[in-house]
Amino acid sequence: MNRRKLTLSEIAAYTAETLPKGILLTSAADEKVNSMVIGWGTVGVNWNRPVFAAYVRTGRYTRELLDKNPEFTVNIPLGAPDKNTIAVCGGKSGRDMDKLAACGLHTVPGQAVSVPAIREFPVTIECRILYRQLQDPTLLPEALSDRFYPRDKESSFSGSNCDPHLTYFGEIVDAYVLEPGEGEV
Image 1 (cartoon, helix red, strand yellow):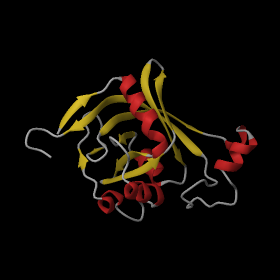
Image 2 (cartoon, helix red, strand yellow; image 1 turned 135 degrees about the horizontal axis):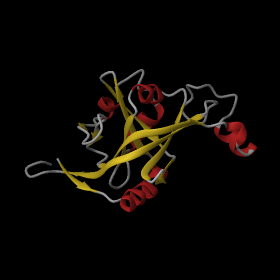
Image 3 (cartoon, helix red, strand yellow; image 1 turned 120 degrees about the vertical axis):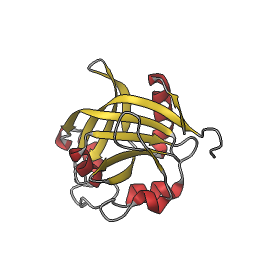
């Protein structure tokens, strides 16, 4: 695979265009790789470094992997994301299954991090966590807190639930589009 490098503005454009449709955040630890769908995230500059801010609920398997390995990749499709991949990676837990295998996704080794890229979601942002912060839903306006952190939804519920998010500020250490090399399809 060839890797066409991306600028911060290109990363921001791909993210802004595709994030509302669902992109993947991939984590890896203990020889396990897991991708989850994210619909929230920001690209910017913090501490004079390019960063991707990702939001992961405390009860998610991804959080457990990020606690063990403070690196992740953000994986964005070119065009519309595969609906089955979004359904499985957004509605199932990696604790219970290998979501990548179930979706027929293929990994490509990361360049600067230990977490792989996903061939079928070729826009790849490689990140190392600089900072993490637990969000406090009680500081949100009541309408947002009620909508995104309802007290009557358990942690296992795949949509909004009672678990707060951890915000992960990942320094962008590499970003590229995976492109087939000569003789590859």
